[in-house]
Amino acid sequence: MGGFASRNPLASVGASREMKLILSYELPFVLAMAVAIIKSGFSIQLGTILQVQAADGAFATSLSGFLALVVAILCVQAKLGLVPFDIAEAETELAGGVLIEYSGQTLAIYKLMKNMLLCTLPLFLILVFMGGFRFNGFNLLLGIVKYVGLVALITVIRNTNPRVRIDQAVRFFWGPVTLIALVAVALALRGL
Image (tube, rainbow, N blue to C red):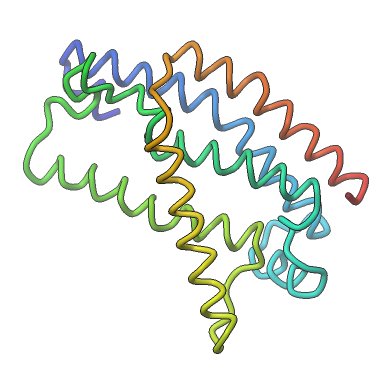
């Protein structure tokens, strides 16, 4: 909305790319979350999801949970606007994209929001798919290792892939990623 409100043509192009990207990755992300909901007995409460994982093991250890985690990591990469899905910013094409007209406090708020997402989204995935954290001794260390590993994986994906075009990203998320998410939902319904 900030890009559209600035009335800058480059920001408008960046904002339209961002909207297309959001429309492409939200469906597979919701399907990935549906796997956790199905495996927890159709509960949307994080507490119940964590209790089921404490009793039966992390969802990521099952086939459907692993596939859903892979889909969720790819969607988080796009949600964070990191390479290869940083299409909305695309500094070489749009000179900053959506945020081209912002500076000072407003730019800081947008940048802070992205950095907060980089901290909270991996934590969310750990809670939903990897059994969460327990704040005692070895389990706390294991939780920290999970978090650092997930952030490192996101960083490796960012640093080893080239940027894709918006049509490639939409085709990628609506094609193989959504198909994998649907397969994960079907496997979760079968108890796998």
